[in-house]
Image (cartoon, rainbow, N blue to C red; front, side, top):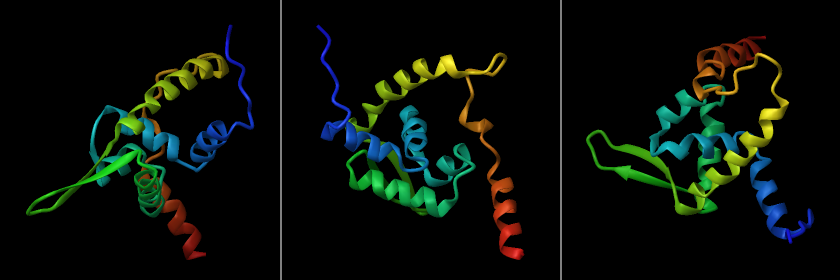
Length: 133
């Protein structure tokens, strides 16, 4: 017999609360392949601004999902990697991917990679254009 799910269950609410933050799920998904430096993360998730990426990483670190690894230099390098708790998100993202396949439009590429997200330069140009007005 399958366990019934209570949508008001505190654990479901906690997970949805975490994932409802913009970019959080994508940051966790991109880190599934291994540690990345901030600049590498910013390149792979090019539509996110540096300030937002930094905030998400701090939040994920505070929740025990990501660890910040400072590598001695010179130059000093900082890499971010998932903790076992963060790596467990792989099962969630795989389930979402499987479920989401049914919503793809005909001809849409189901293997969309993070590199296909709009370039950071384009996002910066858009934000710069808004500031100049």
